[in-house]
Image (tube, rainbow, N blue to C red; front, side):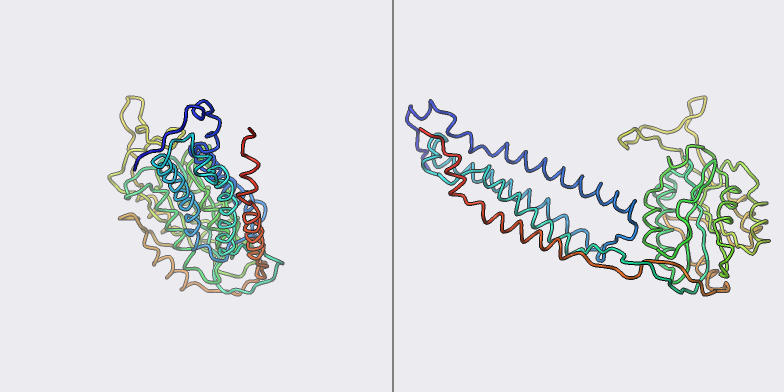
Length: 393
């Protein structure tokens, strides 16, 4: 197709085509998309911190949100394709005359408003709900405190992934198998503290678990005995349910008497089970820069990589003293069946807990917002905005 050339008088007025550039519109949409997702993620995280009664009804459907950036990419590609076709049709100086309605900035604004409506519909489908009031819920089960080692040695990757990642996945699987039981989470390194108080709100327990990393406790070490003590104090003395402690640790460089702490817990009627995270051959401890990129391994004074190994003997002795069992992780997973069997064999008691059970659904507000955005997009008349942007002679 031959390209229509513009007269020389038009070529002297480059301002005529300033509103036809696609690049600035594409960059603006891309930046808006990044800002949108940062706002959504940070807003949701902040909301969950101050209002744990806010939940998503269909949380497993979150991948539908990926449709939003997909349609943005498709729209930018469409704009770029139209610009290439326009250049084949005529010289850019003639676009205001031949293509009076070709306004990428205008189309960009209209698409942005439509995209807000589309995102609102998808969020509405996920159905955000808020706990309306607390209710006393009766449940029958046992009380479980999980202690998770967050020392630097848990970053070793001798289980197919980091020891910490395998432990967190295993704890999530354990939570998924609970029904009426209460669970709490303690994290420990050189010291220990309660990350999640004992509760029947499994969603909250998972949320607290997701935020755990090896930087959570500044004091390095593996104070297994201290972790057992904190777990024991985390149980409610008024609860008639049987009590269990499950330790996820590599047991290396233990700094206190874990066996004595387990024996003390057993005397109080608390079973102590240990999960060995690691292998006998061990693995070096990886180091990461501030961007999360691998930057070598932790070295000793002679410059040799430090190899962290599983202290299986101590963990077996600790479990024996606590009237529990020892399980070693292997192949990137932990067999939690012995823990579940031990729970089923324990005396279960009916306990009353306060939990959010009545929820108010707020999906309709997102649908109302979407309708409002669609109406606004319809009111953005191309003819009106075209007249506003047409340069005066």
